[in-house]
Image (cartoon, rainbow, N blue to C red):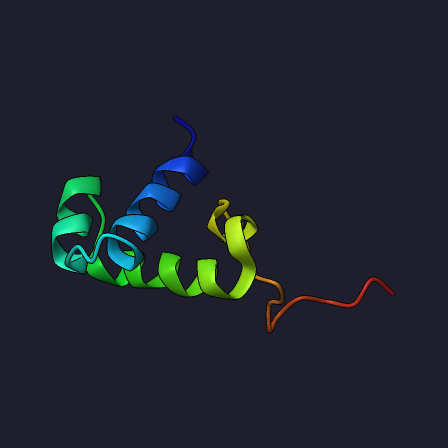
Length: 67
């Protein structure tokens, strides 16, 4: 099962089955905050919101211009 499918199942356990976020977080080995983030991203973006995202910063205050 892919990562997106696992996250989708976790989200559906909370939204459809009414499972507690704490129980789902323990079962999937993540924090409650992470499960809440998945739910928010799923509501906002659908399945695409459950894909891995880059942790790379978009900007850096000391970065020089290309010039």
